[in-house]
Structures are given as structure tokens and as C-alpha cells.
Length: 99
Image (tube, rainbow, N blue to C red; front, side, top):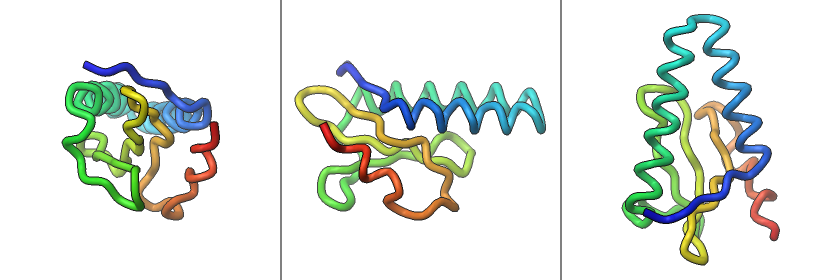
């Protein structure tokens, strides 16, 4: 299993989405957190399993939710760039790849 880094803005997105979902339905909020943790685990176990798009980026769906975990596999670790709702503008997170 490879290591991972979570971009601060991706972490903020995850926390905001979990909070928003939890406010509407606490059980669904907890299920979102579990699905996100599961998605991270899947990406860490087999980082090249998910198809590349726009070059080096990969994404996988966060359980049944309308969110994707966007990452890249580089230097032997995954860099999580976004926890993106599917209605957001595609590629809004690309400026997070610096550094």
C-alpha cells in the first residue's frame, strides 16, 4: 500500500461536504465519511487501477455519492487533489498540482 498526501483544499472540501451532508442527515453524513475513507484505501492499494484523464490524473467515485476522489500517482505516493462534487466545474482543482 502506497502513502498519500491530502492537499489542504481537498481536506477542506471533504470536511465541508461531510458537514453539509451530516446537517441534512447524520447517518448519510457518516456513510459519506466511510465511503471517502474506502475510496482513499482503494486508491492506495492499487493506485494505477483507475484510468488516467488529462494526462496524469485519476479519479474514482466516492461510494454512492455524487463525489469523486481526484488524485495523481507520482513519486511512489498518491496526491489527493480534490474531493469534487460532480456538478463542479471540471478541472477547477488543477492549480493544486504546483509543488
